[in-house]
Image 1 (cartoon, one colour):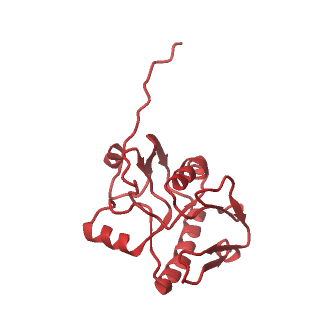
Image 2 (image 1 turned 180 degrees about the horizontal axis):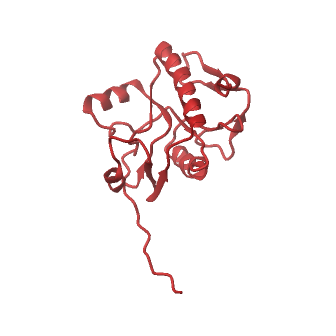
Image 3 (image 1 turned 60 degrees about the vertical axis):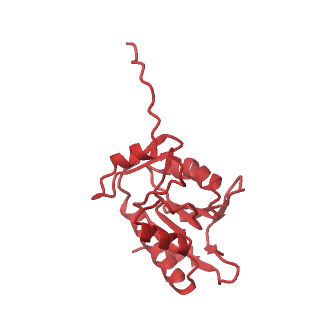
Length: 192
């Protein structure tokens, strides 16, 4: 049986935006360098870890005011037509968040201070490789790839060839004059 000759579709950000139903967050549609990524709804453990990390980061950011935390669904594209990502959690500078809110669009968001993806069986390849290399290329200063089942976090910086693997504590220094964000992984991964 002969396979049909099907040209692959190069997905643009606008094509992906047309797929997104604003009433539903899932499935999550993203495009990275033209490749379409569709992610099903995450598992409950994923969502619990996301919620705990969001709470810890929001508490820190309310005290330190070095950035604003948001998360998926989102529309981060860095102005590129072939990129549209929705990090599980991300922190952007306060002025950029203010501009996005005032303009009522994601377009002002062109710099992230932190990007976080919690790995799921359906997202491991995209989160660990495709998104990680994108975040490095876009000079996101810090990317955390959280493995909730293994209770570890891969910490990536723009120039890293390999991650630092954290098993005890997550630390983030977003500003030289601000105290560090510190979170014990035992707290993040504690049982219900």
